[in-house]
Image 1 (tube, helix red, strand yellow):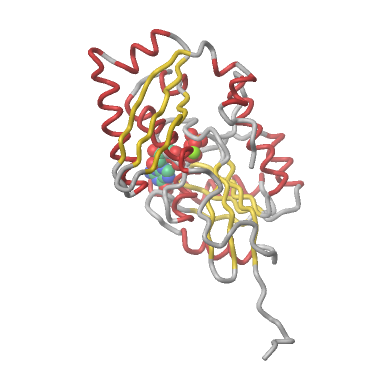
Image 2 (image 1 turned 60 degrees about the vertical axis):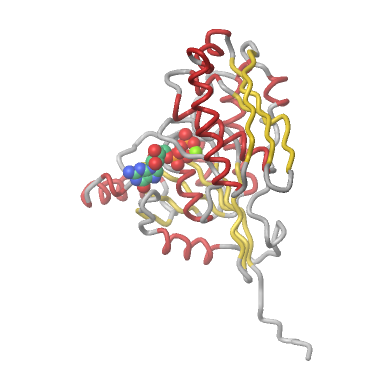
Length: 301
Ligand SMILES: Nc1nc2c(ncn2[C@@H]2O[C@H](COP(=O)(O)OP(=O)(O)OP(=O)(O)O)[C@@H](O)[C@H]2O)c(=O)[nH]1
Ligand SMILES: [Mg+2]
C-alpha cells in the first residue's frame, strides 16, 4: 500500500572540522567515523589535504571533512593547505571548531567569516583529559565570547569522552537532504591515497626535524592479486642530503620504514602486501605550483 502521509525523511550534510594544527582534528574525525580515515601524529601539520569520512545510517548520512590546521602560509604547499580550509567554508552545513583546552590563539578573519556564515557552529574543547575542571570552565567562558552563537562541548577525542552527546547533536542539526554519496561509501578517496598517507605517517613518526615536512609520497603502482597487493611508492624529498637521511646508513632507515609501513598498510587493508619504496629528489617541490597540482593539492573535493 502506498504511504501517502510519507513521514520518513532523510538527513544529510557536510560537517567540516576546523582548528589550529595539532589540536586533535584527525583524532576526532576518526572517532566520529569509527575508522582510521585520517592519519594522526604528535607533530603539527600532519594533515595536508581535505579528507572526507562518511557515516551512513538508514535515516542520515554525515559527510565529515578533516582539514589541515589553520596557519599563516610560509610556502606554496601551506598556501594550498590553507585553501582547503577556506574552501571548506563554502559547503559546510555544520562547522566543528576544535581547540586544545589551554589554547587562546585564533585567526580573526577566519573566525569572523565562520560567525557570519549562518550555519550551526559546534565549538569543541579537546584534550580535557590533560586539564582540570577549572581550566575547562575557564576555556568555556573565554571562547563563548568569541563564538557567541556556538554550542560548546568539552571532550577527549583520544579517550572517546563525551563523543556520544556530540554525535547526537550533529545528527540533530543535520539538514533534511538526500545522501550525497552512495550509502556504503566510507570516503571519497582511492586506496592509493590512504596507502601514501600511511607511509607518510611512518615518516612523521620515524624521522626528525624538517625531514617529514620535506617529503611527499606518491603511490605509483597498485596491483591486486588473489592473495597479495603489490604496491610501488616513491618518496620525494627536496635535497640530496634528505635522500641520504631517508635511506640511512647501509639502507637501515628505509628498511625499518618499509617494514613498519607494510605492517600499517596490511592492518588497514586486511591483506598481505608487498611494498617497494624508492626515494627521489625533486628540488624545492613545496614551492612549485606545478608540482602541487601534480601531487593533487589543487582538488578540494
Ligand atoms: N591527551 C590527548 N591527546 C590528544 C587528544 N586528541 C588528540 N590528541 C593527540 O594530539 C596529537 C595531534 O592529534 P591529531 O589528530 O593528529 O591533530 P590534528 O589537529 O589533526 O593535527 P594537524 O593535522 O597536524 O593539524 C596526537 O598526538 C594525538 O594523539 C585528546 O583528547 N587527549
Ligand atoms: Mg590532522
